[in-house]
Amino acid sequence: MIRQEDKEKILDKFVCQKTGNCCRTSGYVYATEKEIDGMATLLEITNEKFKELYVRRENGWNVIASERHRTECFLNKKNECQVYAERPGHCRSYPNWPEIWEDETSLIKETCLCPALKKAYFEFKSDKTEKTIKKSV
Ligand code: SF4
Image (tube, rainbow, N blue to C red; front, side, top):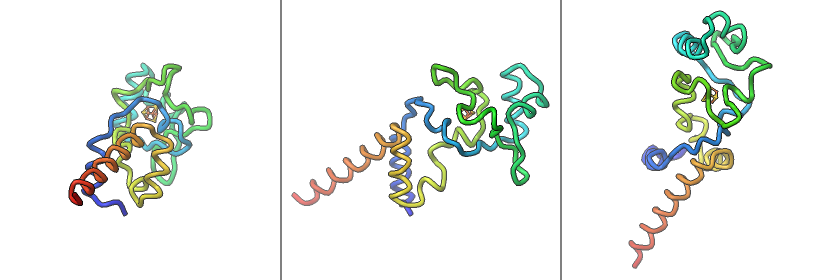
């Protein structure tokens, strides 16, 4: 498990580079009814139409994961999310997802997907090394 203190330091350094890589993974994006309403409004379609096109029910959850839709999700050719202002909380909280912070291996694996997380992680490591060197001299 990554220490909470270390995780917070890495997350503080995280600045999204908008590569869209996290959006292109094959996993689910969970969405609440309110979030679905917001995204449907942005796309100027009804809640029902949004669900028909983009939502599947998985274990009682609404997930954006229809076969037609993932894995580009709502990204356009410029990597911009077309529902960004109303994107689900699941997207907003990236990369603060428990599975990423399970241990160093899972974190490093995620840094291979996300260059912004990689940058934050290596800056954190570099700060730590610098502190250790200063302490030892
Ligand atoms: S809803 Fe938008 S931010 Fe979330 S995964 Fe899809 S494209 Fe990415």
